[in-house]
Length: 158
Image 1 (cartoon, rainbow, N blue to C red):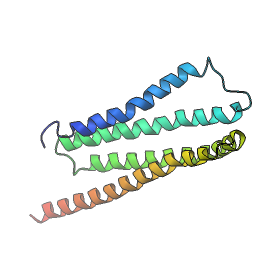
Image 2: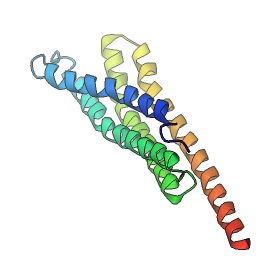
Image 3: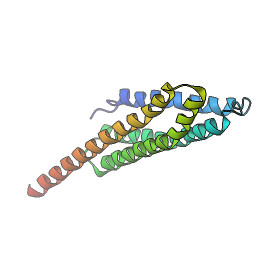
Image 4: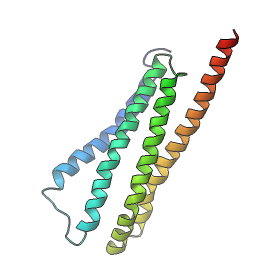
């Protein structure tokens, strides 16, 4: 495959990663100088910690996506390396979902305290989005593994 044919997708990964990094850095600079209202602090700080923890599998998944795009550029799309990258992406998406499910009780309590019921729905969006990504990665992983198996079977018969 022509080198750079996945350039748009690599650029999209960079565009996705940039705002998360910017918000993380801004949060680290803003929070020490502006502590949360003591009334909300027991609920806000676990949520903020959860958001920072969830950024670890987020960036791991983006790194694996870049590696997968690199394999596609090198004509190694149908390889065990690609299947491994999809497996890691799937696991990272499941981990992100679990982190946000764990955070949901804090979000619910904060919504009750602040009288903001829409906050609960907004807290569930990352759960469903990451589960969709996990299912999509699992389907791609299974299809890619089947294609690799068929390819190796055909190579053995020739």
